[in-house]
Image 1 (cartoon, rainbow, N blue to C red):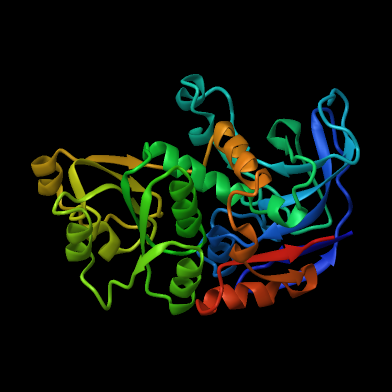
Image 2: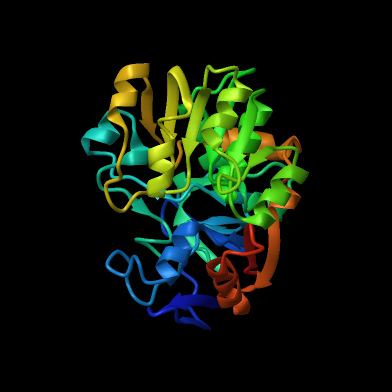
Length: 338
């Protein structure tokens, strides 16, 4: 079979790879589609070389069909359409013992610490596999993982119907957060500077603002009659985002940090004191979020077709990374691994 191997220094080699037969408690999946995640891009750019093992097979946003099952696996059968929640926790650390397996102290992320889904056949622990409902396309199935991220973020933010929500950053995750929050009944504003993404968001019925052209604080103040936003999602991972996120919420408003900050950022702690703000981090997802994402996708409530910008064959994986790195007309790029 074929797989895409990252070998460092923006080098991807398409090569042959022996199928990994499923052992006890494992499932082998014939991979259909795999999305390129921002984490995959960071790996490709060399930012995570200390975390991966060379040559690394990346990829974790995927869909596929069960090809074989190991001993003891009774909840999946050959031919089932599935996706994977790519978290393998230890079950023993304080986080796991407290029921927070998704932020396990020893968490192994499939596709980073283990081989991932940019290959024809992927063998994974059966507890990471979730069924996809009949009628859901495998292209949309590959969007379940990032959609689960958005569902988790919106749940952490406790978004309610009628609330005013601001999303800082209109990339794939920010856009999905906006769509999930809107589906929950919130009024949503997305701050973004990429013209392609701004136009796409408008076409999806999401209110937008370009903070380079308009003062977002004044805009939110006018839109909420001086109260401020109920919930703010910081998805830019930028110093500017960390600084402005505290200026936007109402008294006792909520801020959810979704973006990953590699360095400590300047944050207005006085504003937290002055308005009694609540700050939450949101990391990956839990099973309940995957189930919610599958429900939203299967009911056709979200315009998932519009999120997919391009679909490339596995052999053209580098084209996908180059398009994402260019940062122009791209939202979500899928790789056809079949």
